[in-house]
Image (cartoon, rainbow, N blue to C red; front, side, top):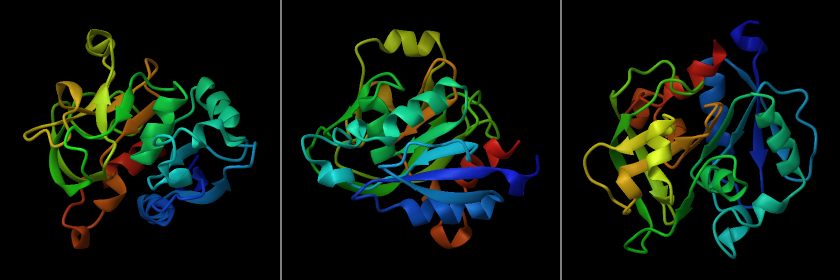
Length: 220
């Protein structure tokens, strides 16, 4: 399979607003992409699934809650169960937490404010399809943009034991996340949820290219 044969399904919900950014990053990395709407049930034509950021269903109830009960969710669960790569970014990460594909949840920031800034992050594990091209403990810079990005779990020790922490804040912890955590994966490491936006750091014009490897990693 060549890079151009890899097809990425970009999931769209009402309120998704980072879908075109994901498409640009995926295509820049060398893969194909297609949009898949919330009411579809078939993922048989894609090799990778990415759930972009935004405000699905206006974040009513809580971020990701309504999206987690749409027709596409069962297909995403089956896709992940088959060991296929799934990436949720920002609102996508919140959705993955809602549907229990990753441990823990992303709740309202400690200061209850929307935060939008560039942050230094540490790559804690390289065993996922999206972080395999980084070095363990490498410091990268990616932007964040969220109001409900504070990570919490009741079993953080298990995350350390099973190497499930993907990204953590390297310096300042802007939202009060537990143990500075801002990205996690399932035990099998094929499902990844991160609050920072790697698709917004893929070329020099965007001030950083540190996010491009997120989209190049799964091409191998």
